[in-house]
Image (tube, rainbow, N blue to C red):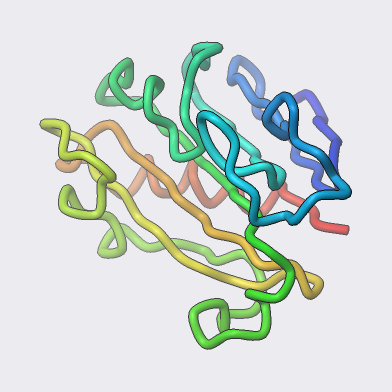
Length: 158
């Protein structure tokens, strides 16, 4: 396993997997955290995948999900403005443990045959996050969802 740490986030990336924690280039930490840059938010983003992540991808994995095979998993953790942590949308406390029933093709940002997604909004240590996960096969959800949950258990938020 490899431990990644940046922007108050850390994660143990399983062996053979790929991961990155980043802010978009040009993101000014002193500017409004809601500022949007060319390809996504200026807030921290964490991606962990069971396949090589392409360099050019969106915050919710666009550019990566198109490369997924049936045994693949992608986990995205996107930070929102801190003020959002006090809203009803982010009322869930702590990183979730997802269930196979949480995943569905219609949850995908864009429907791709065979893929299913799940999305949960949550607050961790007074920081607001969106958790977006994609699994490569709808018909074998349980073992893939177990892998998603393994990654989520390995995330730490300062």
